Length: 341
Ligand SMILES: *Cc1c(COP(=O)(O)O)cnc(C)c1O
Image (cartoon, rainbow, N blue to C red; front, side):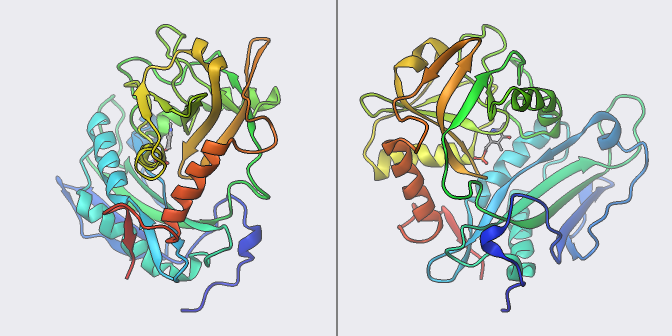
């Protein structure tokens, strides 16, 4: 298969239109057979539920070329499961999990020429999503929905290596107790835009959100979960019902335990503990782990011993091991890698 003429090494993290996308529609209580289409536009009513009341959810995952030239996708079954959970909370019909994985597979296959070659640092980012498409003016869920998957090639999240980030403790909240923080819904992002623009204007890379009820516990950033490393090399991640369960973070916890032999803990993490930790990272599909060097809290700074030049040693090992698994350099746990034939 001939690859597209793209400067893979210099790709940014942006949208590039690819050849095919997958569409299935939910009408009269059932999902239509999905089709691949070249049409990258969507036509719907001006009163569509998604436009008026933001009834929309999404997923994000990647396809890679491995060292031996296979195209693989990382744990798509977990994205299928998470989209189903998001759908239930948003009063949307569940898209069958096996059909989700098939849709992802079809989109990768149909756009194989856009899957970046091994060693370029680039990957094919996949975006499954679902939205309420029929007109709704009184507040209620839509009756008709579309499930779609498109893809776009993206460059390495950090060009020239990952420089540690500086993040600020936000004065805004991301998620309420008993709210929607644990699902991947567009609405959680819409309301974070002001907080992120504010943080950037002030010169910070990201926001750290605390628990909305007590503002004493660490939750996550706008789009990534936290991992901390204690001074005695324990890997700790915050536990809360309002955190989005990152597949990268869950995978890294397994890697820490089973590949690196480290002790791992998922528990409430108090902000007051952070000054005693050795390393801090943000985990998500886009960057795998981004190291955090410094946290700014209303005039006070917490500087991690790992510093502002490079990842801490444990963070680096976690990063190398997980990317090694994804790129086929290390043996993967059962079921983590789906080969696209
Ligand atoms: C998507 C997302 C993450 C990262 O999840 P991954 O499955 O690792 O990509 C973390 N936090 C939020 C709020 C997210 O939306």
